[in-house]
Image (cartoon, rainbow, N blue to C red):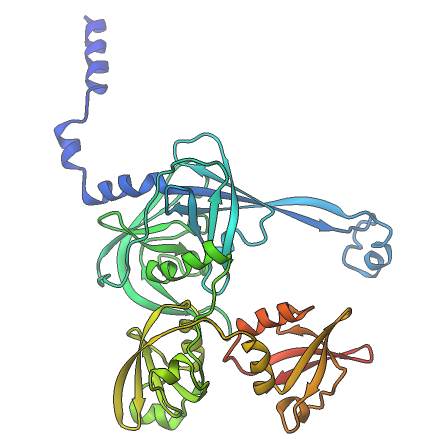
Length: 435
């Protein structure tokens, strides 16, 4: 009798889903089932080389410097884990740039797959903290196509999914508490995020934020350890603007408006109760000129997102690429107005002419690097004492060894002032802020 009772229990436990299980299939369960197969674990390896002293306790000291030329470099691997989401059947993966930063090798693991697949970095942009990977093995992969985030609602239920350890999904739910939360990333760079109370741990960085319909609306980003109970995600509308560039060019091209702006005065803020970016000058023939933007106009918002300062304007406009259509709200005198601008690519050679106009010098390239070939009379460069023959070795914290690297560094910082240049003269290095 006991045997038949046990057999009956086994039969009942292995029976199909009960009616109650079907009733428990909420929209969240359905959304996770739709999006889950496209979520991957990302494991990276970084090869680090260093020289070490054989004398215990003297690392990074005078002794270490003395012996470093005698010791062979020592290599070791560091590993980091994150998440990502496949966005097309060919195996392109969208994730955070910081997840794959400086990686020597990248591996991804799909849910339910015991083996790791090698992936290659297609392109990344640290300013928007996004990267695109591509699975090396050809195949048809489960994917979650980018949706839209411009129609999100405050209080809307959202789901954050990650695959931090490669063992399965990490799923948290919450509601949208801010549609455009501005977070200061550095002294000159801020970004807009979707803020939710769906918890995002570091290992979940790069995973998808989805809505109740299972649509991809954001890329989860772990920003600060102290932000417990708060989740931040890059809006998918921002990601969609740059993904094509990352796949095609390996980097994000800068959309060119043709405006040089500055912060508005304290008197303006006290009078109007808001900040903005004051148009100081623009290039004739630029998209801004064609759209009727004038000197002394104040940029109040871009695509409905308020702009309180020049830094905020620059941080926002850098998320657009050539060909994007941008809606700009302006204040001209006492009159508010709106105009639409189609951004273009930077004109050829613009970085060099920009450096001459704003900083006051021109450059030539020789076997030893970059040399100042001209210092414009009356310019900022002349006022601080720069002269022909000085060598430029760094722009901000970025080494510039040739004109191409210099142009790329300037392109990333157009409109930001002042910039710090490292100048070498007679074997002495000087830090110079221009203008």
